[in-house]
Image (tube, rainbow, N blue to C red; front, side, top):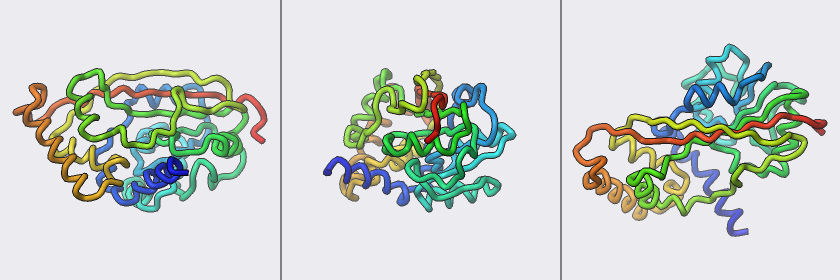
Length: 251
């Protein structure tokens, strides 16, 4: 019960930081998006769309796009940036779409928030026969020394990590296929601090603990040889992509 309460608190926390989330979180590399949508057709559902980080790339595909998220504040930011998108309140467990209405469901940085026992059949319900579920995460590359230290200072281990490795999907979907993209994002110190402020495990801390984290990140940027004295630097990411095809009946 405690773990579930922690999970729910982290999931709800994004309402308090929608604008900083949009400013700080990285986009998704074009190669990853192309792979997720490969051999798919029909409308696209962006599940857990947040402020539209993934939605922006999906809009470039000249296909109808639906965006669903449980946070009104996140959808407020998305709606301001992408007013042409059909954005709806909902969740992986309760999708506000009809049966067989989309050809692909993509979920960026969000599948670990859903209950797959409920979300898997619900996603299958809205997918057309043979449709695809695509999951994607941008993850900091902690094989790099300063990035690993950054994660420790941000106290990322405090996060509720409900996702499996690989993520749990299962029937009526077939086997998950994995693809990885490595890339870097130019960043400033202010961007780095906002990245920390956008994380659920930061948002849910009290003000004193948040201030301590920010102070430690400023020290890292001023003292680590890879960062000290630089106005900009490169944040290395590994984007993990998974996709599975709907094989069995959707009900």
